[in-house]
Image (cartoon, rainbow, N blue to C red; front, side, top):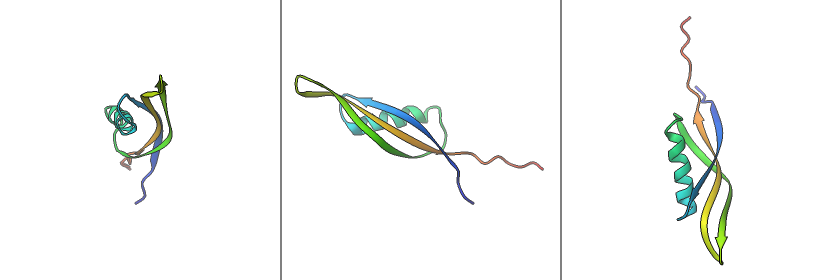
Length: 73
């Protein structure tokens, strides 16, 4: 049997790292979305102040499996 997926776009942010920004987005999405299976990063950007990176933002898509609906006949 094949799976069907849906993708949603998210932007995660962190003061610490790109990885933390990704984890933040995935963790928050998992609170309201079931069957999360994968993610792909689209863009990375950040905020710089006085020559120092202050904040990271990561645009990503997460994919989740669409549930099969039982056929009752």
